[in-house]
Amino acid sequence: MPEGKIVKALSGFYYVLHNGALIQCRGRGVFRKNKITPLVGDEVVFQAENDLEGYILEVKKRKNELVRPPISNVDQAILVFSAVEPDFSTVLLDRFLVLVEFNHIKPLICITKMDLTNELQKQTISEYAKQYRDAGYEVLLTSSETEVGIERLSPHVENKISVFAGQSGVGKSSLLNVLRPGLELKTNDISSHLGRGKHTTRHVELIEIGNGLVADTPGFSSLEFTDIETEDLTFCFPELARMSENCKFRGCLHVSEPKCGVKAAVEAGEIPNYRYEHYLDFLQEIKDRKPRY
Image (cartoon, rainbow, N blue to C red):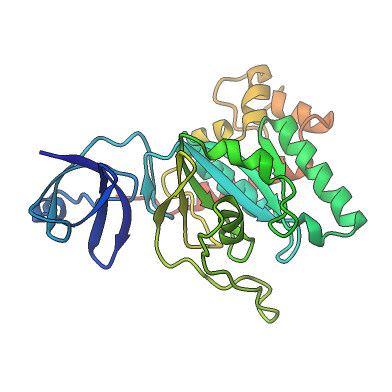
């Protein structure tokens, strides 16, 4: 049986890339019975009489998967956040980073719209970029208008499956249009009334850019820590994970425990206060979550 990769899912159809051709497939009933939903990014076994009448018979084992956006087998997540319009949000970025880290996906932080910043805003963003780099993340400062930073972004998408994710209106589609001229993905301006972007991407689709595949995903502004437990959270903050090696007690949650290496690092200015405060807020959110039965 032939094998391929799902590169688009739309209206109950799965579009499988096989030997350079797209095969339109449906899922067999066995998936509903076993509660398996094929995802963009899945490696699948299928059968097809022609390009329009195929059926997916098997979904291969996934190395990872995301729920929102629904995609699997991702090599890296390019987290796109704008410097302004909408304003840069550390708390939203940290939510994305926690979910990406929890799913063992390498993150890359890409801050867009640097051409719209004034000197004070530019200085503020540069300081945030330094702090996230110190935490262990790679951070790129870019502009789709002036194409600043694009030459540094392009190599990151080669030979990988990347997911572009971020709040609506930050410029994900604009970046992709610059990375692949002629793509002409639809973009929209920010709503002045709501202060956020309109959704321009309605479905998940893998787009060929160079020798890589990039997913342009629907924008969204809320993320829940459904599967993350309290003991997992430290490891989703790389700098906290490093400093936790200095904690006296194993399993320290860095809240009120004595001789905590993380709290000592925060007090010494080695970990930014906002990162630690976000950790505490997320920890409480996980504790307050209704138990699942």
